[in-house]
Image 1 (cartoon, rainbow, N blue to C red):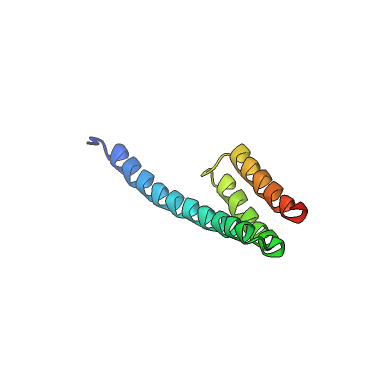
Image 2: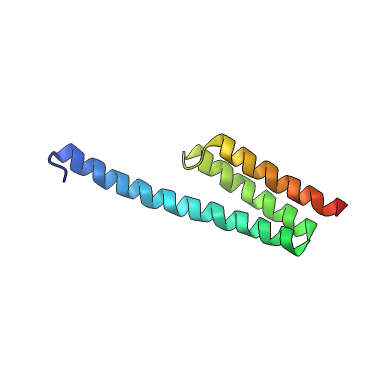
Length: 89
C-alpha cells in the first residue's frame, strides 16, 4: 500500500485515467464493430459511412495516448481494404 501522500494521489490519478481510457477504448471498439457489421452485410455505402464515423474516434484515441499511431493506421488501412474489396467481389 502507498505510504506517502504523493503515492496515494498517484493511485487516485491512475484510477481516474484508467476509467477514462477504458471508456475511450470501448467507444473505439463500438465504432469498429459498426464498420465490420456493415462490411459483413455487404453494404459498401453503409460501410464507408461507418468508417468515416470511426476514423476521427480512432484518431482521438491516438491523440489521448490510448492507442499507438501505427496501430490505428494499420486498423484503418485493413478496414478500408476490406471495404474496397466489396466492390470487386
